Amino acid sequence: MTKRNRLIHTPEGVRDIYGEECRRKLAVQEKILHTLYLYGCEHIQTPSFEYADIFNEDRGSVASEEMFRFFDRDNHMLVLRPDMTPAVARCAAKYFMDDELPLRFCYLERTFTNNTSFRGRLKERAESGAELLGDDSPDADAEVIAMAVDCLKAAGLKEFQVELGQAAFYRSLAEEAGLEEEDREELDRLIENKNRFGTEAFLKTHSIREDLKEALLKTTETFGDIEKIRRAKVLTANEKALKAIERLERVHTLLEEYKVADCVSYDLGMVSRFQYYTGIIFKAYTYGTGDYIVTGGRYDRLLMQFGKDTPAVGFAIVVDQLMAALLRQKIDVPLTAGATMILYEPEARENAVCLSRLFRSQDRPVQPVSRAPGKTFEDYKDMARKRRLRNILYLKDNRSFVTAFDTLTGNVDEILLSACQ
Image (cartoon, rainbow, N blue to C red; front, top):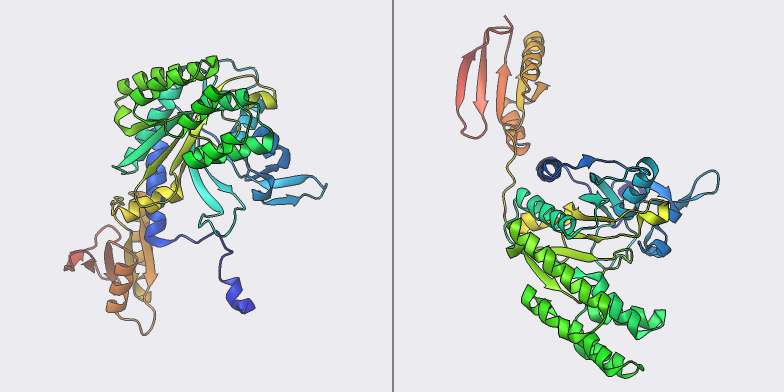
């Protein structure tokens, strides 16, 4: 690739969005934010880059090799924000340290992850989500899940599934097994992938009580409706694991009250790559995309690392994945009518400017365009159709009549222009 060609292309993992695709994305983002506002969330914005320690692995965030890192002039290591949750936690600890009542935040931001080029994922992606701080109740868990469901419905999605798990269930069993860190990571991967045979082979090579081995093995199969989760109580006497199941039972009852329980299934073997999750964890999936469109969970100890001891739960919608699903499922995203083109000859400029000001004063978008030499009215009709412009008003001179062309119907009319006379 020549230098000139390279300059007009984007780096791998990022892309340009323009025209109607961009308008659809903005419309969906607006619907999501409107839904979050209806739940009483206050909008929050955090910097695109922060100190690297905000997202270090000790906090359970993104692995260091997946961060875009650089240094400022004082030699401080900075990273492009890879994850919104620690950023919101840091911000909340700074500005709401002494606030003991619940806080509801929402955002529309971009995150940056330096993932491998072979995964097919974008390295820059738009995320919209919410965080509920200061409430450790099952009611807060259910509210956040209902919020995520309502956001997806508001975006136009009709068929999707939320998989709900409990980080404390599997984690308490793994801690009881007393595995070394490397072995624990291997078991995490096997459990997350529902690899029963791999899990069985792994457990045979480790000195773990037989009843605990059986419980860990059954975790790969314990997913489905709430009744299957209830039956998992016989697998263990671990108090933390049993409390995790009881928590899911209570959340399920609340989700029924929110009328969203039919969108939710359960998975006790769900393992998140974000280690800061301490309670419920969930992801949402739909047709037309190979990855999750929502990820979230409870993180009751994360804010403590920034000096504010308060529980929290939240989620993020991966807008780019959501848009891909809407497109592949052929779900229409209604858009407002496009702008009107005011096409004018040079001698009609005064009327064109006056008419443009009138349109804008009425909150009607307008594009004034001076007809270029050699270009015909038909050329501009084609331009209007390609750019989804609704109408063309053609001002040939300073007369009181203009030609009006409707790009949808093809109708052409002569109308009286009196406002600018």
